[in-house]
Image (cartoon, rainbow, N blue to C red):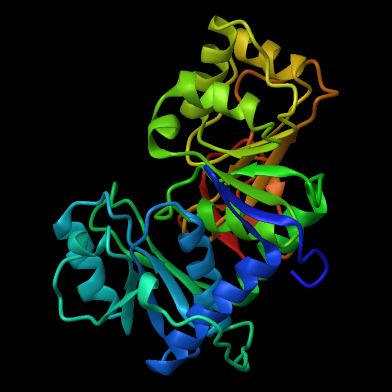
Amino acid sequence: MRRTPDATAVVFGEEDLTYRQLGARAEEIAAALVAVGVGPDAVVAVALTRSPDLVATLLGVLKAGGVYLPLDPAYPADRLESMLDDSAPLVVVTDRATVESVPGTGVPRLLVEEIPTGRATPRPELRPDHLAYLIYTSGSSGVPKGVAMTSGALANLLRWHVDVTDGGMGSRVAQFTASGFDVSVQEILSSLATGKSLIIPDDETRADPRALAAWLRQERINELFAPTPVVKAVCEAAMEDGFDLPDLREVCQAGEALTLEARLRGFLLGSRTRLRNNYGPAETHVVISHSLHDRDSDWPAVVPIGTPIPNMHARVLDAGLRLVPVGVVGELYVSG
């Protein structure tokens, strides 16, 4: 923000914020949070739709030293209530349009429209082991559980992402990922850490592959974070409508096994896109990555998960936690 204060940070329809404006709004939100007692390791639930306010609030929570807990307003009320009961946040940040979707669990509400302007607060002293965010798993293997990520682990992820991804100020990143998935934190913060612009599609565009493909072309999007089914659907829609995505340089997929059909592989190669296969459960965020570069013409049909990012380790162990020989089936253990 200090290096590129007048560059565009966030765009949503006709609304756009420079880094200076985004930073000022985040400071105001941080000051309001500190005023109600937020500090290191204090959980702040955020119930906002994908918008500039969501981005500013995420930064505001981090500036206050708090722990960001996204509450997707589209979630069922009982799931939101369970998350609030389990995490015991100090406050819920929401807005007038969304506040009715937040269950009444007795947690104080802070409406972004009512946060005073022109206020700032000193940054707290933070350590790498202080928490940065708390995100709940989908519950596909049982009851959803909260995963708390430290700021040191998040910094390691962002440092790796910046090192391996091209582009800087002027690059345009789609803010596609729902706030309840940990990929959204990587998507948003990696963009803001490098002076890029976050471009937010509306919900109707986001849900329609044909509209999304046209939007990606119209908005000259350079980076897209999306699971394989979305990537496939977008590419299929673009091919059916007879256009390519010449500006798309980086596609990061996670959450699904990555398989490449011939048409999809040909389309992405034709657009000279680097395809990154990110793998890692919520407990570790992105742990392992395999990149398919635009110079590679012989992409595999089933993409491997690759090797761990710096400061992370992956080992295949047997039931006695011993390393298994190459080719022997075991369980994948990650650490770092």
